[in-house]
Each structure stands twice: as structure tokens, then as C-alpha cells.
Length: 415
Image (cartoon, rainbow, N blue to C red; front, side, top):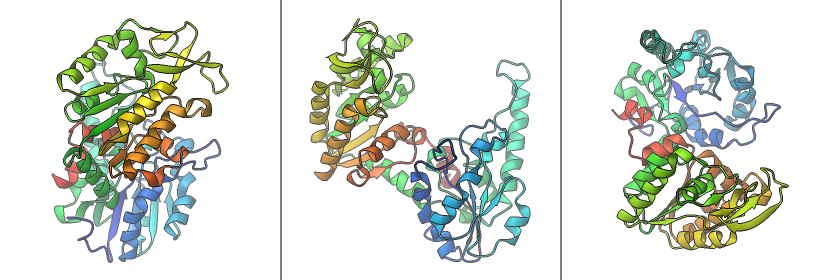
């Protein structure tokens, strides 16, 4: 079943969204991208005469109630965006009466699903090395099914619209689908757009295909890097992982971030790039600082000759030009991860150069997919939202999808 074929009139829809939005110290939303992303699906249900039970997680409360991660903090913002009152239920397992009383056009928002360990399905308070862990895990899986079944009992149909968590086999993202038949479960409009965007990158590649991968650790990106080396024409590697590559060749990197146990992995990436005929672009120069702070002293030096007591916080001007040249003629672009510590205004020039080049290529006909929290934050910081083709709401989910992995949240609907 697709969401455009389903008749929502008189139906109660339980919709899994990703409202894991950033909050400031006063509980105010600092970026509502994820809420705005879910609105087309939520409004479709209401406009067609259905009622809504919205469910999401926020943060990592690890199976315990934590007021700082309560979805009550976003209730008013959701109501404002939907243009209708929202009933908040402060325990996701105790919404039976409210769900039963729901009338067409009415909306319920359930409290943070992860206040219950059953949502993630991980035993709490027991170490993996403990002999009793396997039994505890088995018991938790059974409890997870009961948890998902209870959530399912609130509604007539299930809509999965949380791409950001689609790579997790959690109660609300995958297990719940078992309690709805094929005619009453579907992907939401946001999920369909996300799946299409990934498909545009992987199945309909227009060349040259350029991927920009940032981040502090090679280890966290190695799977996606190796996968991309079989698909892209150029791979730009930037961010903190730069210095693991520099160190692998005996370079001096001062106090820059490095994974000393991944030097052989870095060399392996270079070898695989060469074997596949992929142009690997690394930072030849860096903007370095004498401390990790926006007001640090800074200077420019080769990325492999950083003095002791200094660390690389951004790519240098030479590298910025090389990155721009590599991106400019691209026809397909994947951007995941900034070029430096873009949060510091004095060290955001590299990320801005990447963003501007992606926007320029997009204006010239490229399809550009931006994903991952930091890259998306870059796009917003530099005002490029309307100058890229698609901004993904998923970080890990996007990377796993591009890596070719089957996402449980999609498999639960599509089989």
C-alpha cells in the first residue's frame, strides 16, 4: 500500500516521525527541520478526514524517564505547525483511552518512546559480557513485541515516516509493522522522498559523481567510504580524518585529532581508490589553531607539517580551491560531513567553500544530496537550503542506505 492510495477518512493513523530535534537549555527548538519534514504526511492524514497518533523518540534516555528529553517540550510547536490542537499523553503505553476517543481531525502526541527500554529492545543494567545477557536479550525481545503490539492497538493503520531511524529495528520503526496487514501499513511522504533521493544517487548516476565525506574518524565512515570507491569518480575526504591520512604517511600533525590504530585503514583506502581509478582529494594545507576555540591564534601550514601544540581546525585556502575545482563540474553530489569546525565562525571557510561549490554545481544541473546533522547545519548556516537538490533528514540511515544495506524500517513495510 502507498500513502497516496490509502483512504484515511474515519481512520486512526499511528505515524512514526523523527522529532528528535535540537533544543536549547530552555527547551526551545533551535532547528525545526525534522518537524517541517513530517508535515506533508501528517497534514495529508488530517486533510483526508483521519486522526493522528504521533510517536517519536528524543535523545538517548536509555530506557529511563528524563524530563530534558520529554516531547512535551515540542507539543506547542507541533500544534502551531499543524494548525490544530495537540493532545499530549505523558506515557506512550497509557494512551488507550485517548486513542479510543479520537475523532477525525484530532491529534495525539505520545511521550518519548525511548523512556521504555522495549523501544530499542536492549537489556538495561546488564553487561554484554555477563553470562545472563543472552537470556536477558531474549526476554527483552519478547517484551519489545508486546510493546509494539500495544502501540499498534491504538490505530487502524501504521505510517513509517522517520527516515532518520529507519536503520534501527526498533519497536516503533519495524516491529510494529508486524501487527498491520499489507493494506494498512505504508511509508510516509518524507520516507518516499528519502528513498527516491538515495535511488537518484545510486541507480541513476549522472557523471562525474563526486562524494564529499567529512567527520573526525575514518573508523565511523570506513564502510561507506569503501562502498563509494566502487561508485564515485572523485572522493573528497576532509574534516578530522584528514590527519589520520597524513600520519599514515609519516606526516607531522601536532595536536590534531588522529586514529593511530587506523593508519593501515587509511593506506588501504588510498590503495582501493587507485585500484578503482577514483581521484582521492585530501587537504594539502590546513588552517591550524593553538587551541580548540573560535578565538584561537591561527595560521596556515601544510597538513602534514603541523607544529607541536597546534591542531588543524579547517582546510587551507589552497585546499579550498582544489575542493571547489573537484566539485564544480559534478553531475551527482553526495555531501556528508563538514570540512572543518564550521561551528566556529573563524574556522568555517572550508565548509562554506564546499557548500558554495555544491550550490554552483546544482545550479548547473547536478543532483546534490546533503545528509548528516553537521552537513545539514552547514547548509542552514550558509543559507543554502534552496540551492541544493535534497536535504536528507537521516544521518546514519542515509549512509547505510548508500552503503547498500537494507533498512529495517523500509523492509518492515515493503518486505
